[in-house]
Image: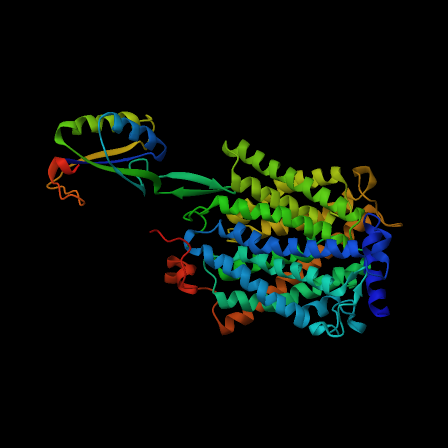
Amino acid sequence: MAKFGVRAGALVAGVAAYGWAMGPAAAADELSGGDTAWILTATALVLFMTLPGLALFYAGLVRARNVLSVIMHCVAIASVVSLAWLAAGYSLAFDDGGSAQAWIGGLGKAMLSGIGPDTLWGSIPETVFFMFQMTFAIITPALIVGAYPERVRFAAVVAFSLVWLLVVYAPVCHWVWGGGWLAGLGTIDFAGGIVVHTTAGVSSLVFALMLGRRRGFPTELRPPHNPGMVATGACMLWVGWFGFNAGSALGANGSAGMAMLVTHISAATAALVWAGIEWLRYGRPSLVGIVTGLIAGLASITPAAGSVGPVGAILIGVIAGAFCQWLSGVIKFRLKVDDSLDVFAVHGGGGILGSLLVAVLVLPVFGGAGLADGVTMAGQFGVQLLAVGVTALWSAAASWAILAAIRVVVPLRVNEETEIEGLDITAHGERGYELT
Amino acid sequence: MKLIKAIFKPHRLDAVREALADVGVQGMTVSEVKGFGRQKGQTEIYRGAEYQVYFVPKVQLETAVADEIADRVVEAIAAAARTDRIGDGKIFVLDVDRAVRIRTGEEGDDAL
């Protein structure tokens, strides 16, 4: 028991030093019913982000003939990752790594060995902490689904997601949240701007590059088949994100409340900015645009949700709505990379943006919580830049290696005829829409 | 008997139905169709990317009428479906050899 108490204490101290003061309950080594109730709820909200939020958000953006394949990818990833998280992922991220602690956790908690209903993580049962973290581990590889739809082979999706979880997600999660070297440097990443969005965004770019473009990219593509479905999924993501960010306070406290508030304000701001720019540029604000903007705002506030105030949230939202829209054009038209559903531009770009901006917007002059004693803004910015840079490099290199290895066994891509016919009927034997 | 087949903009369907009721048309069949004419489709913008949509959604209305009212029906459709903008559609008139009402076995104009 003492072992878990020490680990949890270190984690909480690490967050508290750079964020809004945590309530005393969070640091106590006894169960808090309030904290536990909130994290149980937040866990459900974060799973809801992937299933069906993200699945619908992505499914509406592809052609009608691939709608089921995208949902299938999300459900399959959620299932595979859950088992891998139990088997080893959680332990690699959050167990004590001994002499390797800076880089990777140990295998002492593989299959939740030694953890029962009474084991605590801070003020909540460790089973609840495990489940909450698992929902993050699920959505991160599921975000990458947006890089490869309409042409990827299903076996490649499953194999990549499984290995990627253990090789990219678990270590980076350990570096930042599991007491690894980035935590030691004082990296601020409240809910996953680095751990979730930078890893998924950069890996998406690599996957899209290695897979190749869809037939007809970028001028002969078909438009999103169901913008209403896109908006339905995006709005579920908005609600679910309350669990993602406010849940990352790991308690029912003031930090959670402020995180929820700034999350919401950033999303609303970025949605308006994205749609406003469309209105000016093309004469019409679109539904797909406004919901893409709100996702950009959510991704960007994620690392900063524990550090900034409402003014900081508005600033992050404004910059996110403009920057992510600009970035999606650069990726598609200048670099001509078919990161099909803009995972890098919206999630990667947003997460990286927020992870860097937090070093400035954490300052009390912007209404933020302030930096830790003895830390300068420049110093914090340097730490953030290093954390983002190393995470991006590791994500890119490891994703490349994983895909190169998979490619030896099974092609990443379906053949041309299958791509034309669509993945729903060819890979899964089902049709999204019956015409009679 | 004539079969009148009209392809026009979906949002004009209610106006066309009312206009046809006014000239005495008692039944019609409507399908949602897609196509293009000289306008060659249209472009749509999503997330800054321009998509060429070749097949634009239209409705296709079919109705069989007696020879005497065929011209009035064509004029009614043309008047009700017109927006004076590109993509207003087309009307075709075809001869009908035979018509049967399935329930009663009536034939010809009686079957319409």
